[in-house]
Length: 214
Image (tube, rainbow, N blue to C red):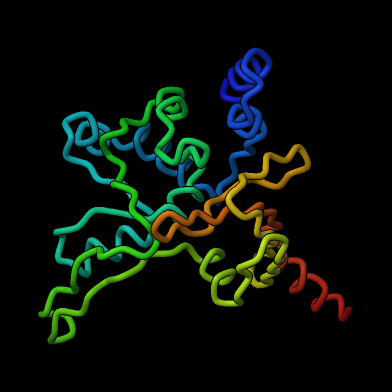
C-alpha cells in the first residue's frame, strides 16, 4: 500500500520525497515494523496509545528518559531519520506513513538538534547532575567521529552488519539503487545529509566462512 500510494503521488507531483518513500524496503531492523506489531498485538499498548498515555522512541530516547528520571521524552534528527517513519524532506514525523500504518503521531518524541541541551542526568544516578548535550545515532556518530565532514566523504563500518554512508552535504539523495537518505546530524542551521546502504548479514557470512575454513 505504501509503495503503490507513493509511486502514484510521485507520478503526479514528481517530488523526490514520494520517490524515496516508494522505494522503502521495510526490514526487521526498522523499529517501525516492531512498533506496528506491538500496537496490533498488545491491546494494552494500543489502548494507552489511543488515550495519549504511550511514549515511543529509539534507544537514545529510552536512555534519555531513564537518565532524566522520566522528565524528558525527546530524540534528535539523526535517530529519528533511521526509523523509516521520519520524513527527512520535511524534517518531521511522516503523518502519511503513520496514517497508513495506523500509528498515532502523539506517541513520537519531539525532535531536536543533534547538539542540544536535553536536560541533566538525575543526581541520584552518578551523584551529580551531568548535562546531556547531544544525541546521535550510531552510524552517524561513526561518520562524525571519523571526521567525514566534506561532501563525498565515505565511511564504511563492518561489524554485525556492513554500513556504507556518503556525505551528501545539505542535499538529500534520492536513490533508485538501494541507498536511502538519512539526516547525519543537525547543529544549529547546519544540516548534513547522508546516503546509506547496508548489508545486515556480514557477521553471519564471516562465521559461515570461518566454519568452512575459508
